[in-house]
Amino acid sequence: MTGIPQNIKGLIFDLDGVLVDTAVFHFQAWKRLANTLGYDFTERENEQLKGVSRVQSLQLILKWAGIEKTEAEQEALAAKKNDWYLELVNQMKMGDTLPGAEEFLKESKAAGYKIALGSASKNARLILEKTGIIDYFDAIIDGNGVSASKPDPEVFLKGAEALGVEPADCLVFEDAQAGIDAARVGGMHVVGIGKAEDLHGTDFVIRDLRGLKVGQR
Ligand code: BG6
Ligand code: MG
Image 1 (cartoon, rainbow, N blue to C red):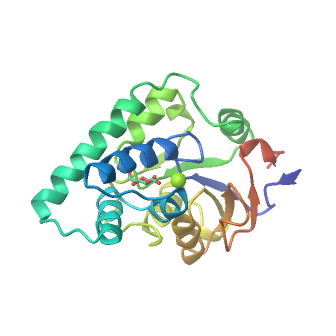
Image 2 (cartoon, rainbow, N blue to C red; image 1 turned 90 degrees about the horizontal axis):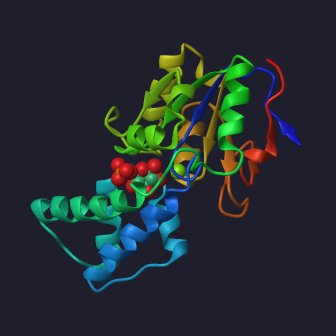
């Protein structure tokens, strides 16, 4: 089993698809919205929506569908998608985390790593609270606190700064190519969560957080 590289002091986690299984909820809600517009998209296309902000995801779908909407219409559509997404999120309970995620957070904290969230989601705090993992985080940087979306490194650089750790001593956990690119541009190490064929430019890829040993710092 792979371990955390020696120099690492700070761990920065993406949320959707890394700690919780909400990437599938985003996919379902966007698909439902696209279908109301007479459009559909595949799981492969959905890879491009991962890590990307709500409004940018909508704009990508509209572009694929060849549909133009005013800014006000886009806002209404994004709000509708979010309502449907939250219906799914609201069914989540304490402990609804991805395999190995909570154990990994617990062991990392006990081993003395600084822990941050680096997510594009504006719903991040709600999800961390509902699933009972919010107290593991020393810093939370989410979609409410950044102006540029991944692959811009802003969210991770702010995370590193909040932890007081140099970017080069941070390890980012990401399931999205946009997030992996953001971590790399920010000068950080990055672990891909998912399938190696989908994720490029990582230090290494693991299926889920059961695949990484914490060890001692
Ligand atoms: C990212 C997801 O974590 O957050 C994207 O990977 C999502 O799919 C983005 O669009 C924004 O999330 P939210 O919850 O603010 O709509
Ligand atoms: Mg993600």
